[in-house]
Image 1 (cartoon, rainbow, N blue to C red):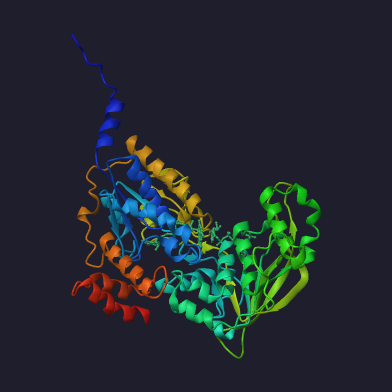
Image 2 (spheres, rainbow, N blue to C red):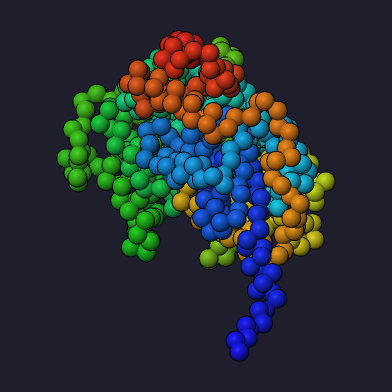
Length: 508
Ligand code: FAD
Ligand code: NAP
């Protein structure tokens, strides 16, 4: 007679869990939120994912950070759109967690809560003059040209400036410099804000200095991005080079550098040669240069000074000269100041590009979630959120920039999110996350202000159509009330609605 083998009870329990519905709330719809959702939905057929997003629009820094002249980077949104089409996914836009819904409420209704809400504030230099209107953060400047609603009051006084100093030399600093130096007509076809294009057209900018506190070998930019800036030469933008005091001591060691660093040095040295001695010139060098830029090293800002003629500007920035040192042969280079070695650089505008900062969400304390105010991240172990005693806090996870700080491109954010999502599934399958009574969004009362994915698609369609009439890839709506008005208006047919809002939005 056939006797079925006894099934291991652990396997059976695991199988039941695999079959039971599992609700995950993700806070933030940037790359981290969407890639976490992607992994969860793809790997377990019983996971339901709800994303809560502060803005009516999804995609975080893919929409509001990535430079408008880098549209290929935004291809990640194709994957995010596929995730959103899945029936086990729901988008709750225009909902700020900690304000429109509490963390406690999410915890009550979801088996797992994932923090993927990025870094939404600025790191600070902590120097006198930093709060002057003539000192702006790269985050605000980027948000301004990318149409982020909260940055639309920035209105940088581009028609009053000649010299700009950018502090920090990461890729965000390079993005800011490229947007300021590229002819606005070239940018106008992208999804850059039309207001930014108009202001850039009236810009009186002449020179940009990109100032780093450490040396050339510690440059934070990548080669592709610096090459793009060098190639603006074709539009009459001159690269003023790097001080020989910085480069001469390192050139003899070029053979010892890794391939990327050696290539970086080649790029810079090649550009500093007279045109006839340079290799691979893909364009004709113009006879007239209208703008210039320079890479400066071993300098830290110590004070910015207000411009007595115009309070919206600064007049100069005081820079402290530094020297490098290593605590041990293998440790990263640090700097110490050279006593008495300071100088003033003329600048009407200073852009601080020293990283974005994460902030806590109200209610974290109550749930035992530890927020590290100093580096703006949530205490976690590879994505599992930890309590004060460093034990795992069941049901809480983190991914992306809020997990580890504002470093990493979209590809690394994706890998990070897959790791966190993997831990969620592992913990669920091992029965470490409890709560069969947690019903997800069913019991939430979010009110009428929620923007669904269908609502966003309506706005998306409008922005693309408006873009077409302005020969742009997209014309972003930059005001939340206008976004909601467009979404909620079902009064007339689509064409009439389009005409109605076209004028309103293009005058925003
Ligand atoms: P974010 O993209 O910031 O997403 C966080 C989301 O959470 C946002 O939508 C935000 O509105 C939402 N949110 C915040 N608080 C709340 C709350 N309380 N409730 C609900 N929602 C909330 N990478 C590249 O690969 N290529 C590039 O060219 C590139 N360019 C960049 C340019 C700039 C200026 C910057 C700053 C970064 C760039 N990056 C680029 C890096 C890339 O943008 C990041 O790796 C990635 O966006 C981080 O994703 P995230 O989801 O952690 O954060
Ligand atoms: P980043 O690459 O970390 O660069 C930050 C810069 O600020 C560094 O030069 C750093 O110098 C400097 N800095 C930090 N604190 C400072 C202080 N107190 N005083 C003076 N200088 C200070 O950060 P990011 O440029 O904001 O970019 C964030 C991430 O997004 C990066 O991973 C970047 O690659 C990515 N991104 C990618 C692209 C792209 O691929 N095209 C575009 C934009 C952004 P030290 O090195 O000395 O600390």
